[in-house]
Image (cartoon, rainbow, N blue to C red; front, side, top):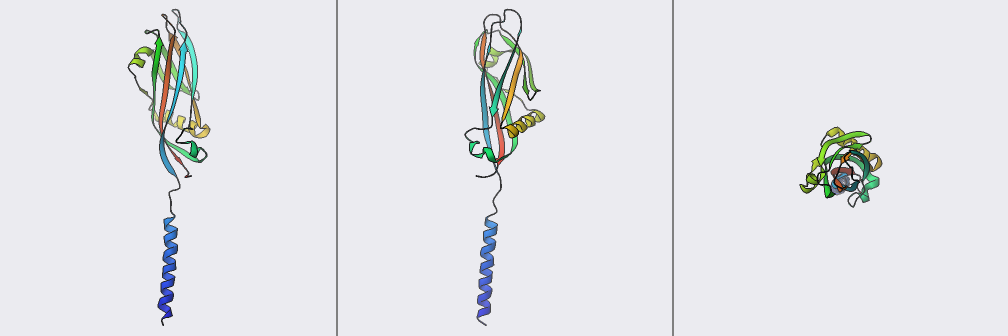
Length: 181
């Protein structure tokens, strides 16, 4: 009779330990984290002498940075682009110079601006934001597929008094999911 309670206790203890082990190993199979992707493109426009001139340049934002490097082979999704901004910085040249431009991704215009006085926008540190969900999703898809997205800047500039030089900084704050290391 003593062996029945002892066997039951052993069996119960064994089942308890096995179930504890099974349930304690239930880990989340993905991790989510935020990171910032930044690119600064320097743009030079020669003196235009009274006639607007065309310009075209491109810049690439890559997914690889200090935060994402360990996970590059494990990224499963770009969950969201929380913000996408750009601004003009470090302006020199014709203070009255203007630009009209498009920003394109994969041939699709995501931003159009007319007659922007770059010096004013640079001095004011104006932050331009792109928030169209379809456009942001296209950018996210490009980042996921190629781990990079190339932005094309094209338009016209008018700077009669002197050439213009300025930087265009693009910033994205994204949330992505990846398999744990």
